[in-house]
Image 1 (cartoon, rainbow, N blue to C red):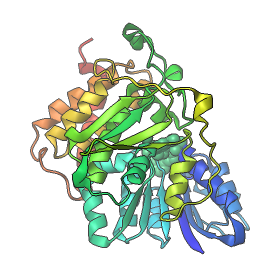
Image 2 (cartoon, rainbow, N blue to C red; image 1 turned 30 degrees about the vertical axis):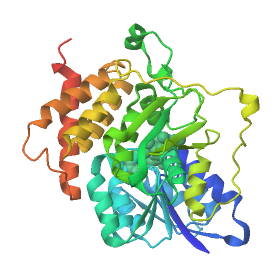
Image 3 (tube, protein in one colour; image 1 turned 180 degrees about the vertical axis):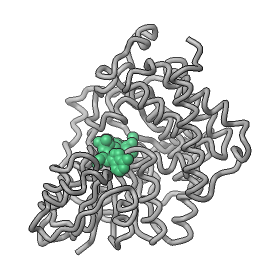
Length: 393
Ligand code: NAD
Ligand code: MG
């Protein structure tokens, strides 16, 4: 019997993981340790009851009483607040899924690595903000990180045991998101509701908007660099509207290995859950004849400045990943709140990167959590100020 924890259980990735656990509960294969969530207390308690978790934790201290009531009589422990989430991550579990959205996932994910656990990582922000810290901690403790982002799971699978030295390039695909075919001049009028729909994937609101702006792909380029240690010049993005090919690894002999599958995160989550074995997963099987064709386009860096910003951040090195991620999270908050127009998100991030680039220590990669969080805070503050005034409209 393996023990598992899910951080961010009530989100889109968390629900998919829950579905997989429920379906493969035969002979009590899994012992569920911790489940964490946010404001959806009813769902968190329901999941904890149904999986017979040891502990359920909400991010919000003012919701603890409600969680406790919802779990009354079950023997399931309850706790609340960011520190309690880190403590939950510290409880021994063979496999922990990090499916919290945003940099909030960094402290608990890091704790899993410090205790030498296996971290199935959907929370890409962790690697973007703190690549050196995360990979260094895992190397020191002997912890394993399994990628759960579909593109990175695809690279991981296509790479197999092959030597990185023979890899000429790695291509991650992008659907192009909600505004792929919009005329550029219309982007300034894009509403939050319009940006929150995705042509192929059913995901949380934040990553869906990030897909429309291509900030999701920008984060994924940096995630690829940090996780696989691949040179930025070898990482390519290809727009592929059907989202069937998730990534492709091309070798120096001219051969390429692509990973294909229906756009369903239960593949990547299930692959990491059962790794190194493969299990029968409840995802639709591909019918390429029915699909008829797959199409591709070169990415347009004028339409999607986020892609250029990712490259610039990798060139700048140091704290640029933490700054880009935090400025992006702030700009996204500001777009959702109506303080920024859609194209202004990338302008806010660019202005933040430019401004903080001159600060002391920017060019040094943060190797401890406190330094990452300092850069994160600085970047959010700058981006927030940019949104409320100094953008010069
Ligand atoms: P979501 O918004 O649906 O769910 C996020 C989860 O994190 C929820 O359980 C929420 O309660 C919790 N949470 C939110 N803020 C928190 C905070 N401050 N502290 C603690 N918990 C908090 O998000 P999602 O779409 O499931 O994405 C989760 C992560 O997985 C993100 O990093 C995303 O980029 C990544 N990812 C998602 C998908 C997808 O298909 N949804 C695909 C690839 C990668
Ligand atoms: Mg992805």
